[in-house]
Image (cartoon, rainbow, N blue to C red; front, side):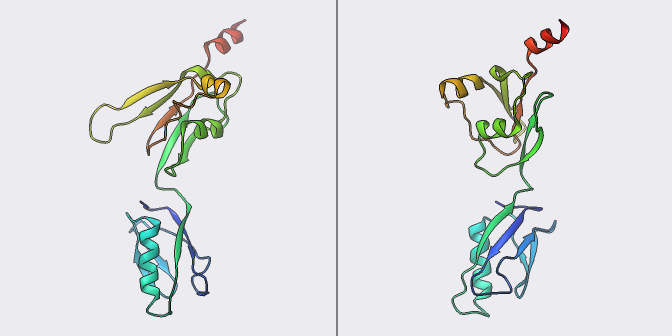
Length: 171
């Protein structure tokens, strides 16, 4: 389900006013579409938006076929944190993100502790969240993907600093 400020790409073969249009969902949940005006899209799926736009365009065109794709997810995110990774911070949540893809994108360095990566899932209903520890070396050395969890919106991946790296710095 889409929400502000996600960006949408509109594909409308044969309708030059709409073909290739990229638009951002405004804070009021609407998009401005040439010819069709203001359309409320917040909370809808790309398929639902496609159907709405096609129905509206059928007033002006015969057999309009409009497809909407997400150009950029900005409303939902997960976080990758740690002091020893290349690219930490807020990452766009697409619904297809996994622990492996998130950690691979963030990147370990020589001071990371891949055996103790933590995935924390906050509770959305005032209850306690959950945290699981993942041994990434089992993933990349043995091909064990049992802990390659599908991420949820708001998840936090923490990549800790290795105590061996800390010890090495002291010597």
